[in-house]
Amino acid sequence: MNVSDSERFAGALEYLGFQKTSQEDADLLIINICSVKQSAVDKALSHKRKGSQKVILTGCYLEKDKKRFDVDYFMRIDKLKDLKSILNKLGFNIDKSLDISHYLDLTPLYGSKISALVPIMTGCNNFCSYCVVPYVRDREISRPMDDILCEINELIKRGVKEIWLLGQNVNSYKPNFSELISRIDQIEGKFWVRFTSSHPKDLNAEMIETFAKSKKITPYFNLPIQSGDDTILKMMNRPYTSKKYTNLVKQIRSSFKRHRNEELFLSTDIIVGFPGETKKQFKNTKKAAKSIKFSMAYISRYSPRPHTKAFEIKDDVPNQEKQRREKEVDKIIRKTALKFNKKFLNKEVECLITHKKKDWFVGKTKHYQTIMIKSDKDLINQFTTVKIDKVESFRLFSNT
Image (cartoon, rainbow, N blue to C red; front, side, top):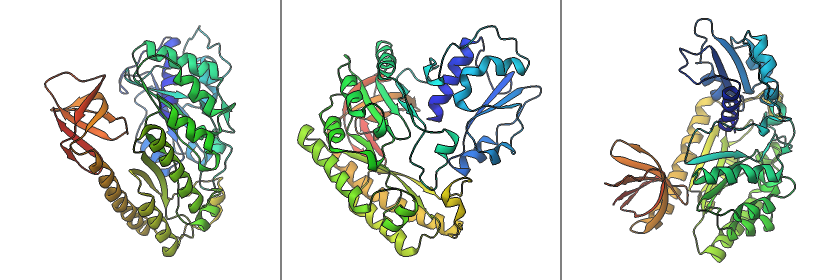
């Protein structure tokens, strides 16, 4: 979401007459921060003012994080519509105005000609006990469906081949996420659609059937479990049980198999070392990871975030133990991912190539596996079908 926000910020600056340049030569530096993780804040701190540069901090920032940055203006991303007046306060002489009611109305400066990020909503109503998003982005706001469809239609005309629908919880898109997918499916042209992120509590049978029947949706699904222990899930304010989550996964896999006869690439998010997480409770997460057989996982070590409910609980799992638990889960995911990828060995797969790295063309398969291809042809920005010669946990290889 922050990458998409940066593209809209860049689009606004270009409209107002700015040109992109190196950080060293810039008159204006924009730091787009994400306070969801402490590591992201620490990374943002590496960007320092150069000379007489004016600096704006935007994105998802907490009040406590503001004190650590040497900037001229703190600007919430939803205030992007007021950018002209903010820049003029900083000494820039801007004549044009951004005639918009919400920052999502802005035309982005897309970072890729192949794959595009399209936010369908912003904000969150869930208040997971570890997450700051409702405090830094406020409550859910859904974009009008016609605006989303108009943006996607324009992207497809430009030759974009992959669309990512973004939201903190796409399943709660209003008026109806299934209807949005169905209408996107009617857009002509060869392109893939992926989305993130889904909340298990709002995923229903209608959505699952819509995804599986869709001609554009790829067989990739990100469904955060966060923990495999019911007590920890309750403390996280995640209103589902490990069993309910597992049943949802079975429904999704069954539906894709029934309608498409396709395997499902399932990714998830997992937090280790949540306050009070015992070794037994952590074992339940490992047990869930083994039984569900994820193809990929974004594993995070818990870090306390002010304003959240979990911040009031003692962070009593030592960082060294969090690192150990992270490695244990990662080891499980690597095994299940390798087992999944072995299903594609010596078979033909469809993929979209985005760039070249040394002698390899690099891209993603329909299932979202990273693929490395050696070929005499120029494959960039093309759909292609290749035979898989070798697999690793998180990569496929082909010599065409």
